[in-house]
Image (cartoon, rainbow over all chains, first blue to last red; front, side):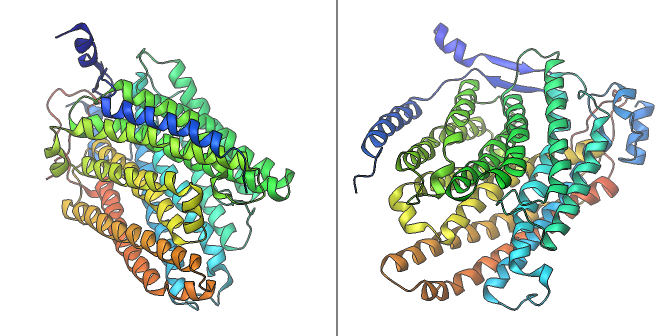
Length: 53
Length: 485
């Protein structure tokens, strides 16, 4: 397991409530959604900034 | 078993008020159980008013001869009742449980809790009576008159101070994502409530008022209901799944994306209005960009449950969290896309919008708060659920009734929008909606029956549930685990 993998799999425990959480990752498919949304945001903002009638 | 734990279990929630500090416990069981009981009441009351309001669409004269039971008086009671009565009371009660446990210290200014409880609930009761009597400030979702808004604002400020003080005093260094959401929700709402109730009604006329009202109402939804609901759900999610949270990284992406994009969405209800075009465009863009936090949260929730689906079968909190996440995904995607100009043209002034607001406020956040109530109530009362059958009925009547309602309102809105775009007369389009309204009413009544069974069951759990045995030598702050099946 690489350092990166072991870091993402590392678990933090909150003793009070007994909650555990992985450091975790952003899945690739979700990163693609983020990128697509940012591209769309820039396009839409430029094209629809003013009403072209 | 410790004497104090025995006393608590024998006498149920009627423990002395100093219980938390007297036993070294981090929270006040009596206070939280009171909140759970009050939230149970409001969560039956407000949806029942909603069912009456819905029936009036089909039966115009139903209770129409009594001024305080007319549609215009009861509708704000329903909306304010669900948002501030049911949801918020549950969240405040759960805050008194969650925040001390995550911070490792008792709530800051703990003694304020009981004063806040009475000020909040009496304020709500006076508020609903005032609304029914026709005293309404005229700001949607901010309709309480001034004599109610002032104590509510004081409560919000006191709660914000309590949460911030507890976080400051914490012994647990790392802040779990629930604390991010809850802290932000209280700060944002203490500010937004003052804006909506003390500034907006008195300072801005005309279209500026409409634009600012768009901000206010969406801050209620996006900067109170959403972060408070997510905070609660994130707390109970890994506990209910009995697995680690899937990704801390995703939880922070979701939080900051919500904090960044949500403040700009307010104007999306005023597309094609005299509000500047670029302002509308920013609102549309921000609404669509909310896909990022929503999909992030849903990925985190379902990622956590992968390999833990047995909990979905066995545990009531897990059932409510998972079904809430499904409604969250559907309702928020609907909300994002309905902001687009073409979708607004189709759906504005139709019940599509009502379907969306029910999917998010009730389907998601009230259901997540319900999950928290199911988790906390039996543990703090030290008792098994009074009736597991009633809990099953609560869940399934909610799921069936609510799914039918949401689907019905969505289809109805699209139908009416299509009719209007085709040039149909508005009154004719309304007449064509009668069968859908009737189905909506039946679905709502189904949900209400489920809620009445479920929340009465929680109340009976506090009073008469079977005591859960405490292992010998258990500390005074021992929290017993109820059996769900």
